[in-house]
Image 1 (tube, protein in one colour):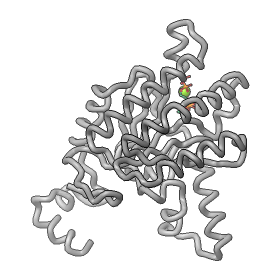
Image 2 (cartoon, helix red, strand yellow; image 1 turned 90 degrees about the horizontal axis):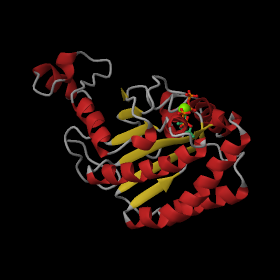
Image 3 (cartoon, helix red, strand yellow; image 1 turned 180 degrees about the horizontal axis):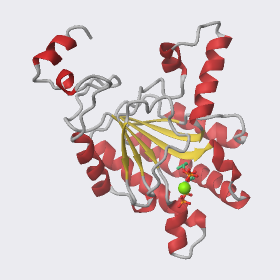
Length: 255
Ligand code: IPE
Ligand code: IPE
Ligand code: MG
């Protein structure tokens, strides 16, 4: 059982402390119904609301979702502006509810390139929910894993610091929550698409064909069940990481 650095509360066995999700498949969901792509993104907001609730119920401590990538700017202009409008709308509708539920919001990503109005909304949502400690919700917006690493390296250089693993861990966009235990990707593609390149070095991966607007608590539980059966070795041998093994006890004493 691990404990929450934010609240000190214990985490249930088998439930990942930090879940990351590439919310993919909105466009295909809409296309199947002969709807415009943005209709799929709207349903995607509902799926995210359901998933936040399910994660709260399961005592997940950090949920990090990929909402808009550095590369998504290259989509048709009407889709990009539809996504921007949707974020503004979702902020005004969802932030008060998230605040009531004890969720602390962060929007990791490149703030340059976002409109001042949108940026103001994001910062306000972060401030409003800053006192919450039940769950952290990171909504990665205008985020790219390569941007994140380069940006962190630039910050270290600007501070006159060496570029080290520890320094990057303290400076990349999820430094406030640590690395994801489980990365879920919906929509059937088996790739990372420039999501958390640094932070997913040892995350367990779960790919599902389920399109994001169809994602629900049952699918989340399938991912958690799968995760619970994984052996996370972090480069060690199976014998070293098994809690009952005398080798694990011995190597644990050096940790
Ligand atoms: C993911 O769904 C949402 C964003 C990238 C903003 P997509 O829009 O990529 O859906 P598909 O992959 O085309 O079905
Ligand atoms: C990844 O999905 C980005 C988000 C979910 C926000 P994409 O649909 O952009 O990824 P690719 O193009 O299929 O790799
Ligand atoms: Mg996609």
